[in-house]
Image 1 (cartoon, rainbow, N blue to C red):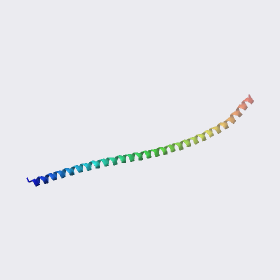
Image 2 (tube, helix red, strand yellow; image 1 turned 45 degrees about the vertical axis):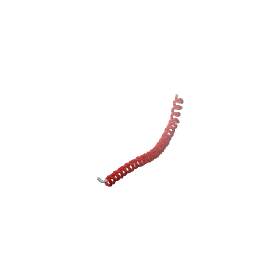
Image 3 (cartoon, helix red, strand yellow; image 1 turned 90 degrees about the vertical axis):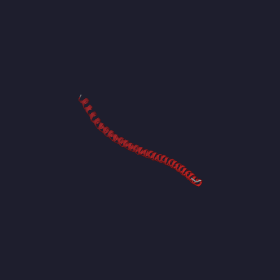
Image 4 (cartoon, rainbow, N blue to C red; image 1 turned 180 degrees about the horizontal axis):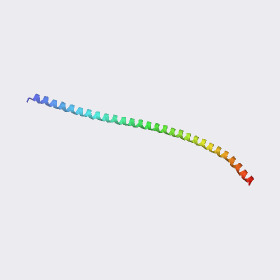
Length: 104
């Protein structure tokens, strides 16, 4: 083989090695970038999920408060009705007691 052929082969091998190294580095950079983008996307999704969860909890708390107010109102109405019924019976009971005492 001539010296010129050896030089061409050596140059070609060096160029091939350079291309492989550049491709390897490019692949590593692509992988790093993909991992960074994935981490950013995960963080973004986590923030969004946490925000949605806070909103759902807030709405649930509001519903609970509304239901408690309704229950309080219903209980107050029942209490008033029971008190009115008791007041009506109290007059009747007082009359009965007076009658028994008078009749003796």
